[in-house]
Image 1 (cartoon, chains in turn red, green):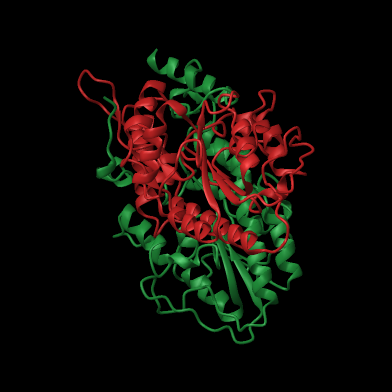
Image 2: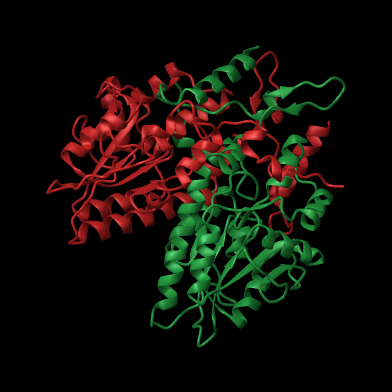
Length: 299
Length: 299
């Protein structure tokens, strides 16, 4: 009863943005189950993160804003007469002591993750949410194979791709979709309006190099052929595998990404797209997320 | 049982970012209750949106990236010899047909929302989440009064403020915190390291103009004194009240923000900070969030 009231109040607040000072979230959607006789309960609405990312004006603006900034950056670098430098960490260098190789006369490229970076996986995400399911590898494999037409370009992506391509920059995808489903992913990107990507040339997939879900090997392969002047992704593993080291605490990982010497790369070669829906960013208990010296109670 | 397994799998996936292809979210935190004899269940972890925003490297990077872009924009405009123009909608103009007044020789300013734009309300947000509570006006009122020292500057904010101030741009806060608690909010901003803000001069609060939770009246007041060259916020109401019109559907609101003639403002005067935790962005059922032509099922 308490929770139902909470939900009603949450919905009311959300609907009254024009007149309330603060509008806070509805409770987690697990509270908002529509009971169906004899069946697993079905959530009445997508989780808050999906509402924000896939539905809200704010989520769309956040994507478009990053892509506008990225396109302007890539264009400025591409037309600059200054010698170019890779934004892929040089092989053997680390996040603590990064090195970036000179590009010589390699052709320019920008490298992007696919899922929740270039495309929103609307078909699969709705299915998972409606089924109240976590990620399920078998379903995702079907999605890679058959999802074409049910994913969309994220806001700002098609404009940014047009700017980059017209500046002579090759757009390359480096994703952890599997090499076995290359055709499905090529079809999905094309159907979303992003143009042609070809496996092994402009599309790199898990299995293309021996390091599995790490994208470092594929980044090195791409950087051996191209001068990578920008990278975009929604997870830090889209920039360097070092961020995924198991021993890093939530706080350590944040410090590594936002402290020296890495801080200066964000918005200047490395571009992050917000994804509050899934991934290694969604992790941690109260003491991981909230510093203990910020605890507060009303009284 | 099913859900417990789901949770365990989710945690496992989240912890194994180095080796799994995709890492998907844990179920909503309501599933992850730690039962306490005779008491309301306590969530074992903050909701996914809070994990992303307040805890993750990605959430911190997203904020820092926006503020770096904003600071560079503000500085470039401030040192430009070109005549300046307000980014506040001219009085009487609308989102469908916006006009922006010339600034004449007014001093330059940048206007920001406070909550989840300049500061993260860690104390209050942890309290709400641990209590598994929605927004509660009485608690929030206490937070406005006594939260100083328990909120923090968002990543990138202090650097951006330093850049703007050194370029001669006055930083102004326009928030729906209440005028009755002006001192608490001044203290909170100072304790977060943002410097001095003074109610009625550089801090504008709900109650300062007769239009309640709309910020339009306060924006007009600020624009009567200053040339507002940039605005930052986490909700569209931080830019224009027209986005909060009750009749707008989720899809309409998104179209209004990302279509012409508004689209060009994002990243060029208007800067959005991602907040998947609360607000009018967290709204909508499955059919609002996911277009019907993107439905998909594995088979």
